[in-house]
Image 1 (cartoon, helix red, strand yellow):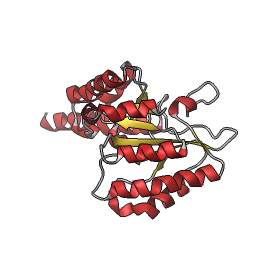
Image 2 (cartoon, rainbow, N blue to C red; image 1 turned 90 degrees about the horizontal axis):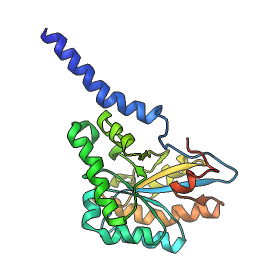
Image 3 (cartoon, rainbow, N blue to C red; image 1 turned 135 degrees about the vertical axis):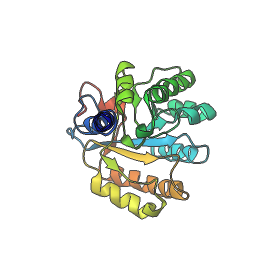
Length: 238
């Protein structure tokens, strides 16, 4: 009897956590992983883990200087602490999405915690923006069954990525960020960088690499677009 219960609990854990996670990452319909290649090379630049009062303003300054619009996936608790940065994002034409309430990994949350991470995080951000949320990205790209069902019920689109710079690791460095992105960015790419969190020293690498990355693709004739533009009638997300 005990062995049966143990096996049943293990099977249930697999369904709720890694089973759902890999289903969402690889097969679930409606999940944004990348955009289509289209008639011109395009990419969507996204930032996770902010807002950060030291890093985010410098990221926004770079985007403003180069006339680039991006998407910021905000941690709800951080957004509540720095609402002025969220309002600046919107004022400068960027989009915002939810990155959960406190940036906890989905495998370490049960039903109530998983729902709260989405619902309360969304409430705090919409209270600042005055706009309904459309986009959700789970920390580390990991989603459990409770979280997935909550996201679906709330009508949010779950967004992953196709090009990850691993800029949260200090060891990646400025050159490593640029090298990884040039290897991974293809037409329709959804690029993930970070304007918060990460290891000590990592944000400086991102800030140094960002203008060089943007200028390279602008000079190559690429167009930077937001998720809203990717999701328009002309462009169907994959």
